[in-house]
Length: 312
Image 1 (cartoon, rainbow, N blue to C red):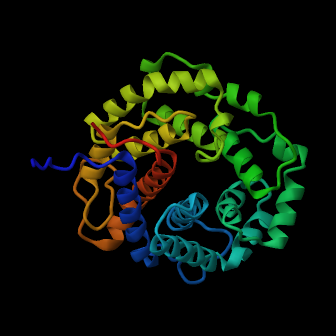
Image 2 (tube, rainbow, N blue to C red):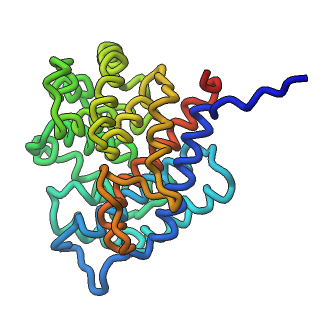
């Protein structure tokens, strides 16, 4: 009897491995994202640590939402959320920031990741519900994809007052289904986030209109290939999340094999083709975001592609 060598792993297996490894690195290095002592609601440099806390919370909340990870990985996701929530004063810092700066959207956008996982801060929730009923906030001038970000955060946190999603969608670059060759690096990020927020990170594929689904099915492979060639791994991973947000994901084994190949043994997914620094704190600063994106991409793909066959 001739024994055939095993075939290549399925997309789900590869995606799960990427997500588990990335999540493990985020958990092991979470202390690098702790807020400095004496941090107040002013947050002079919010992108330095405040943003990474929210991004880690996003990854943890989606792992819990999808519920397909191992018991160990689910525990890691809960610990990531608990760490970030504690760093934010169990929501008090978000409340103080929103109370002082009415037009700021980041307290809501960070809070919604915790709300998705069942956390609640009563005073912040009441304040957000009130603010999002005000004309001044509904009329705030924002980039179209940013307006979608706030809209989805309000919807997910349960503080919205009803929104015109078709109008919000048509205002975006993607909503115009423009010439695909006109896309650039920044526009590509706008496209990915338009999809994330319309579908609530893949939970609502029907939130993406059919004509946009068709457009993305045609052009995602091209865009992924472009940014794969120049080793923009952060954008490649974000485009793979977009694939998981479609009603019928493409499930391309080759694209997932490429992402798996660039992930380091410690779980980091580099943002580009440059070497990852040896200093752990610098590596966290420079590659935390891409590793979060990889954790999200792998989590959603493992869930959406659960019935995908092994690669031929």
